[in-house]
Image (cartoon, rainbow, N blue to C red; front, side, top):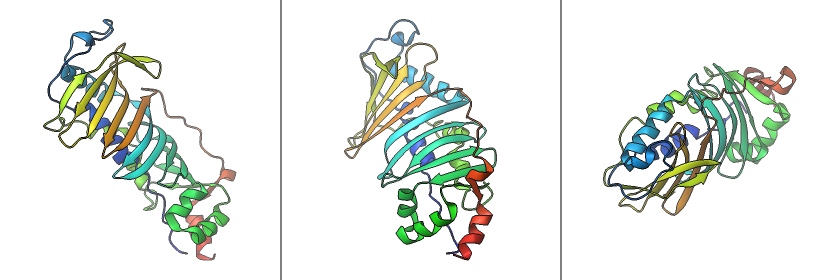
Length: 256
């Protein structure tokens, strides 16, 4: 076995797709805010614009996502920043999970057994796990098998993906004030002619950050919780005993 089929974390596509929900445009109706932020007097589009700007200005954030992207199940919990660093877990289609840490141009990844089996099959999974022995795989983003993490962890690219306007033909309305993740929010509800529905919950106190996004597409629901705005990505990394360099991994696999 001379090639590792590294798990491809779908965070970039999934997160960008979810966050684009704040750009919905169209008609506005109903709903009152809490009177403390001025959102109660704004239209749904004006609130959406403010939420987009707040999201674009964020230096870092954490998103927890459970749902689907391109029809494939996705579950993740990542904190990431504009410098391209991140830490957390990303799950695959069959319930597996990969621990991920990226600081600068260095990456540490530890897929669990279910992830390896999903990616490369049971026999090869057993082979590679016999070499890694539960350790993190460590290497630079210049390595072709780790390069995908450069995009996955780049908040700046997520923010660039939400610059455009919303899809045409959508109607957006302000929902009733609610509480999500302990924060008072104003829901922005939109539907498309294809039966797709998105609700974005915008904080109605303090900075109008998007707090939660719920998408329903083709009968499948994706929920994204966004928290920890502007909090730094943890800098702790696995010890040398807990890691195996990707070059060494390749070398050992060639002799396996």
